[in-house]
Image 1 (cartoon, helix red, strand yellow):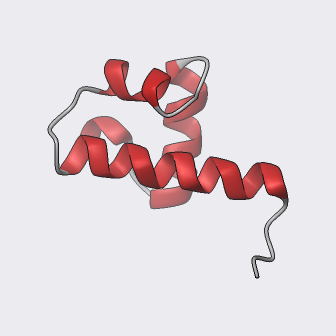
Image 2 (cartoon, one colour):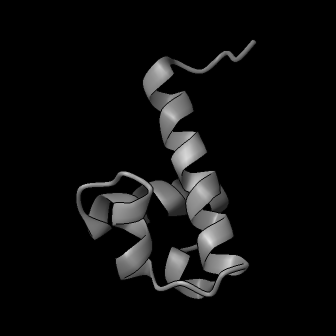
Length: 59
């Protein structure tokens, strides 16, 4: 059971998928944010940095 709200749980899952795409598959931030369900790169980058402590462009 998760102590996260459904919205936060979904964002966490999207960020985990994005991390894999960036790290293991070598994809670009501009391709990944749409693939994982974020509407704009700014929101994606902010959420990613808050979750992982570094920007997605730093991978």
